[in-house]
Image (cartoon, rainbow over all chains, first blue to last red; front, side, top):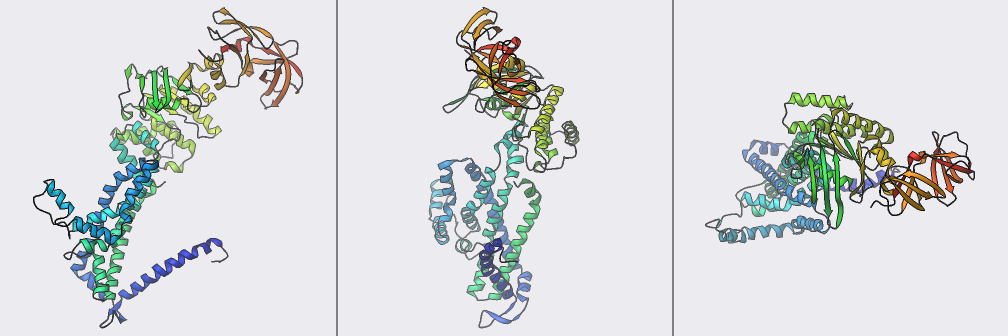
Length: 284
Length: 352
């Protein structure tokens, strides 16, 4: 590697940033996960695999891991279903209307994470506006317990992650030439068939990054499950933070974090492998 | 296969009138070309035929029955697009077989029909390639095969050769014409290239600002245009304004133009100002005293197969002509110009 090559010089800031803020901490965390537990300090002096043994042999942790992965999966799918029609609509919009729609879509991201979640706590309270509305419409007899349910966690996550799904899909839809739709309809395709055979597969280059982004963000979400999920059910991030800052078991907390990361990578890898043929074909 | 008639078709975009009463007719098995510059309404007409656009007025019938109420996907027309519009995520064979698959035909039949049509357009061996991995000419033939395999009642081609280089354009042009004639499919063909229109069509509609300026055979369009616009658009042409026009009936006229007196045919019933149309190949160089007109050579260019000359007449009008390549002319030389009277044509400046 020659430093006289200007292209390589340009890479230095990025490489330095990744090294300091990603490689170093992750290496540190992997090392930490093999440390023995400490007694009056966060970790001990020796190395062990006992934390991984404990996680993998205890059904409780498998359950929490499964809940985290499945919840993120549900968030991703709901996000996709909610976002696709919005993205479709946006891809047709031009000028000021498009700007307005972009602003609407990005609006959940303009609120701080705590404010947004406290907002949900108020909205979902027993005498909050959600229940009041349902009561007023006569759809329910008595207020529903919405707060501290898994459903509310999913709803709140879908709400905030929609922009991450809408924007790439909108982009992909904009790249589909309208003549392809005309061509398929001239060949006899109904609107449903055009969507199934042409639009859906060709928007996959937008669906894929959208799903990956939302999934990864949802698996790692901490504040929303912590505030809206209540004490009854645990998710991996709340568990990890508990170990790290509550009971000060840094090695065990690190091991949990590594298990969560590896599982997420496996899920993403499996999804990528299953869809690689479609991706290969549909990318522009 | 099908007789197609377009009557008084109208299409309006906000305050722009794209089609202002277009009327055309394609007899069964004919190839009809819509010729004109961009914005003349030729593509709009085709898109109304295909069902991609809804007309604001008029009628389109196929074998006497209106199709305006039928959506594009039930018209059963084949459409070939300028940018080919191949499905990028489907292989060549999947692209061609897509329409058959929609008809839920048995796999084996789809297989044979796709195979046969690929052989017909010489695409054998490319069945598993993606569109992005084949050349422009091959993509164009996939687009053609994809339309033909459905045995459409009507084939609609929107500038199908516009994106090909000159050599390929020639090849694909003949392929389209051959296939169209072999299968006897009625076809509409949109182009802005007059040579394409001439070579391929049974009938040509020259379009101007949302109307059909002239609808006739290629020969008539070229030799007997109804107005200057048509003559200009269909090839190299010389126009000489006439000083006096005397009608002798039956479309024969006696005129005075550029100092000469001529008797010739023209558009019947000319009343106002008229112009004499002389195609370059209707003119011949002679000695200064022998020709109908006399003038001076101002430019000459050797093009290999022919010699192109520009001659300025005494009244100042300029004539372009094509002479045999070995004819010796030098700029400044006095020459005479003989006219092939059967190729001279009188027409009004603008059609009434």
